[in-house]
Length: 469
Image (cartoon, rainbow, N blue to C red; front, side, top):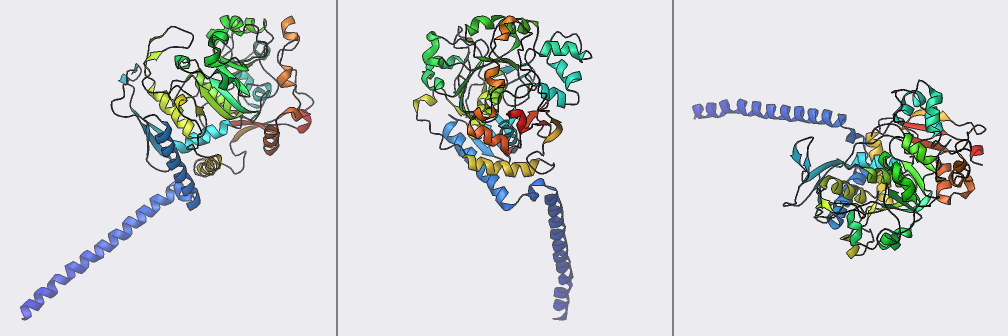
């Protein structure tokens, strides 16, 4: 019996030893996890903020399921999201740069996206003198980027650069956040010929069109007749006088750089002409249509898009006013536009969506977006508190020296009677109430974006209310 007891006793120390090692290992793992979690920015979020982002992701996922025409959203974490096309989707566009066909899934950081696009709601998207004056390298380096055929990469001769830019530089922002309630951004896709959105488009407070898109009775039932803004690339300058066809109130906004053709055209017309602020940004969709959305969001509460290729099965690249030709299946753009709709940035109108009632009740509400935005800002910003935490550079406007309006009388006889004063001499009291309330809430500060996609690179210019009188 004793040997048996000894045998039993002899087995106990190893068991206790293993239990001790297991407990020690558990403590070590917990310590490592705690250390990692404490270094995770998400650990700084409250339960309410985490819930706000989680609810927002779920709402975006449901929105894509309801509105994506086959697209599905897959949640990775409270910020990461993947949009997938159904198996068997025809990916026919070949990317020469990466030597691959267009993929069937796209990965997004929703927290970054909501911060970027909500920021555009507060931005000035027209280049102004006050921006160039406030930015440390504004006249020397940045101005040169906006002038083609300058012969120099820097404005060593500021007077020469001013001569190039004076045609299109207002002293201060001519357009304000919340200035319009609804805006229609009309692309040029041939899909427009499958619809009759003309009356709906004309019902908006402002309509934004691209490049050489014709506006006439021939296409009126498809694209409408209202014309307020037109975003144009440099190649469209030669034909723009013909395209305008006497529409002298339509505002032209040059997408990238000004050059001799633009300057010659500008002197012939009384239309207001401005330069888009900022350079081309890298993101999930490119082109003039994307810049038009940025412009619209900076001025409008609601942005409706028409004529963007967002329906499945698109195999011809064409404009509604050109001959169809074989093209590509732009999956990347379609996925990103769908993401923007489910982030509450735009509302999509297209042939397939025209067959059903559009109530957008499945798009996240402004209240939900605001909660998610606040949580994403806490998570991502890493900068000072307050609504001006993103201001990297500050400037001030002297209310007694705001400068002449664009197209001043020394430009040409046509320019003397230009329509700039409709916008640039508009009294502050003439703005819609929402725009005035916003301006006061922002303490009379205009926000400008610098280059790239960073969220902490704003130029902020403070105005006196006296300068708005």
